[in-house]
Image (tube, rainbow, N blue to C red; front, side, top):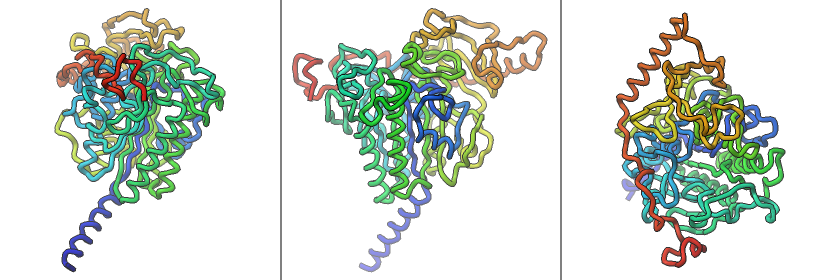
Length: 503
C-alpha cells in the first residue's frame, strides 16, 4: 500500500510541476472592430478602460494582420495557423444552413494544447460551421466546453436585439428567413431565440467558472472568447447601454470591455494572472463596416475597410499581456493571427500538427523583445481563386497591390477606391507603398529612376511566386451549398419552420 501511495504521490507531483511550468492562455477575439476604435489606439470617445489597461501593461502591436477581410476565413486562420485557402473556408462566410464547415481533420489551437494537458473552452461566436447534427461545433474541434452562438448574430430575425431600456430598438436589420438565433451549451440548444441583453453576463459567468474550476484542478487552461461585439447590428445590455458618447457602437464595445474586465479580475482572484498570456485581437482585419457610417467602426488613418485588401480591411489592433514576462511597450514588428497557434504551442511545450503552417512562432518577440521572424504578409480577397492568386503582398515596410477592388461593406467612405463601384483592377507594375511613411496607402511610389525600389518590387514578386507555388487550394467548404434542414432548431420535428423553432 505504501508503495502504491508513493507512486500516486509522484504522479500527482509531476502533474503539479508540469502544470505550474505551463502558462494559461486567454484569447480575446473582437468582431468587426476597426483599427482606430479603441481608446489605446487613439479613439477620443471609446470607453475601453480594461483594454487600455492591457495595452499600457502589455505589448501593443501597430502592424498586426488577419488573413481575410470577412469573418469565417479569419477565424479558421486564427485557430489553425493556416491561410483559409488551405482549409477551404472561402469564399465569403458560412451560414446557418451551410453544408460545410472547418474540416475535422484540421488541427485547432485547442487540439494542439489538449494533449499537453490543457483544459479548453470556447465562449461566444463560433462561425466555422454548424453542419449535420452540429458536427462542426467547437466540441468537435478540441474544446471541452462551449457556450455561444454558432454563427453571426445577424443571421436570423432581429429577436431580442434591443438596447436598454427594452423599448429602444438597436439599429440594424437581420436575416428574416432563417431560424431565430440559438444559444448553445456544448451541442445542445438551451435558448432560442437568444436573449442578447443577458448574453454577456452568461458569457462572463461561464468564463469565470471555467477559469476557477481549472485552477482548482491545477490544470493549465485555454479560454477562447470570440465576441459578437462589435458586429452589426450592435446591442448592449443594461450595464453598458447608454453609457458612452458613441451611441450603439460605443455601448457594444463598452460591454465587451466590461466582460474582459470581469475575466481579468477572475484571473487575479484565482492567483494565475502572472502565469497567463492574454492576447487580444480581432477577426476581419479589425475592419469597420464603413457602410454603416457612424454606426460602424473606425479604421483610423488606414485606407478603406471591411471586404477590401487595403490595410483598413486587414490590419488590426493586437495586445499581448503577461505581467512579469512581457515587457510593456509598443512594437512595429510584423505579426498575424496565423502566428498565435505556433506561439502558444511553443510556450506550452506542445507538438505542432504535421501540416504546412503559415504561422510563425513570435516567442522571441513577445518574451525577449527581439525581432519578429515574420517579414511578409499575404492578402487574399473575400473570394480567393487560383486564377488571380494574391491581391497584395507586404514585405517588411512595403506593400504591393497586384489587384485592387472596393466592397459593399466599405460603401459610404468618400474614398473612391473603397466602394463596390471600384471594380477589380489589375496593376502592372503593382502599386507600391511604403507603409511606414504612408500607412493610409494614398501615395504609390514612383519606380522611375529608383533602382532600390525596383529591387524591392522584384523581391516582392519573388516572395509572391514562392508562396503561391506552395499553395494548394483546398475544396471550398462554403461552396458545398446549403440545406435548410441543417439550421439549428430546438424543436427539430416541429412545423412550420422556421417560426416554430422556439424554446
